[in-house]
Length: 281
Ligand code: PEP
Ligand code: MN
Image: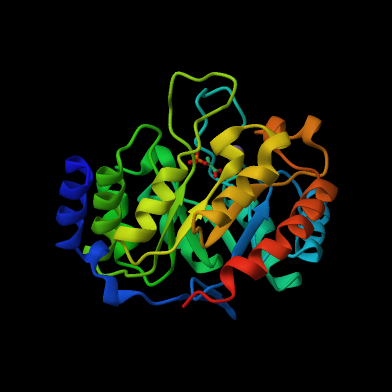
């Protein structure tokens, strides 16, 4: 076996993230993450307004999404880009959660946002740029809400798992790992979706592993094959950006699927979900 992989495996086996017997599905309302399910998270990159959220929530729920995403605190590269609606956006997301009876996920960027967000959402997202914000990791480790931790833009698997270890070590075992692409020399894609990571994470940790082909590729044309590939290499779920009018989206419109493209994708992966997941756990 490759020495570097062996070294990673033995280091991780000594950590909480490496305790295989801890494998427990994560319950989000009445939906189980892990346990052989393939969870679909979908929604806009950012919450923009009520009409947008009504259209997208209804569409993704009808198409088969289990969880609604929508950023309200947005980590943007430029300070001049749309930064998210903040608490006003959280109120809109909460309205969708209640009216449409769908669990929600949204990102927190700092500790001061955590408590208000945790009160109104089902899963807390820690974004790539905060994967090594250790104070924030400890803070989400102290609450009892599932946390979806995204891999850092240029993080090794060891760094990713040590970040997850911070959360587990602080007392919160409900962590979902999310591969969202890493930086490489390639420019045609937004990032390089590292599916090696998914297969490896499934081997060496007990945590559910999700894939985000939206940020991982930045290309709507290849969302379907990359979602199929994620399924084939063992992912427990997917996170996809959907917008009813991508050309007018306030963030990440280029990579957003339309509701009908999303519906098509869910239909297309259905047989593979049945084949691959039915015998898991
Ligand atoms: C997101 O999912 O909204 C996001 C900002 O993703 P990432 O942290 O992976 O860039
Ligand atoms: Mn986005």
